[in-house]
Image 1 (spheres, helix red, strand yellow):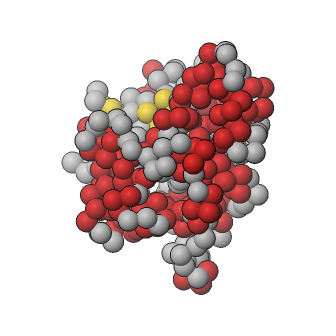
Image 2: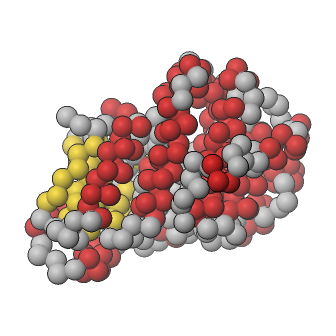
Length: 360
């Protein structure tokens, strides 16, 4: 059975990510299958809209997508495999295609939605979450940054929530995702299968009616604001990560202590890089943000030798050796070389040779 099941049912292009044992983590082949299906359906008058879901251990729904296949990143980086670069170029193209898609694209973000899973859902015209949704951009935990357009969509969350989510990797529930403007409607997971069946069996007249019908579902759960939003805005609006840590570590409340602890476990270098990424992206178009992130991800694997790459080390600790004790270089935020962090934003390509130069 294919890792991506793409078929037209009724007037809907239906996509099911079908790699449940890996929580539907995206491989290069999966990225290519998704891209091909969307390009085919964009030109097909029979298809009014696209619906995408994941498969869990019990069958459809239950898990959406845990991100890119990080074990592949580790293997490819250590082997000097050029397909690593292809993966990011093609994944970011797919993200752009979804954001700019000419037909409604409905993402059923049930269960785990992280990293690359956000990349294939944040550009959806309707983003459905449930009480089982676990949403995060936890890349700083593996010495990476929230890519797949993360700079663009995180920077557009209310207040300084984008900085908070990008730096800490904090996980949101479905109801919190709606309040954070990272989802449109939160529905009980038991409604998803009936909604899917109605989508593929209803004689919708036009694309707009498909979108309207999903958004009008009764039984939506109330959005739940993240607490403490004023404190998040105050701390994560500070100029540097070191300033944030000073503020957090001098406070005695539980949120401040837990948040400081989370930041101290992340890659110090990448915390600097991520803060700059999100703040730059606030003023950027999606295409410019994706070009910046393509530069950044190149540097994650090439700015230092493979043996010294924060990303290779972070993945090793989490997913390869699983010792959960990455040896970050440097070990403390206060010791990061700001000039090195700045180099992540210098493109390794002249603009007319950039791998994403034609995105608009």
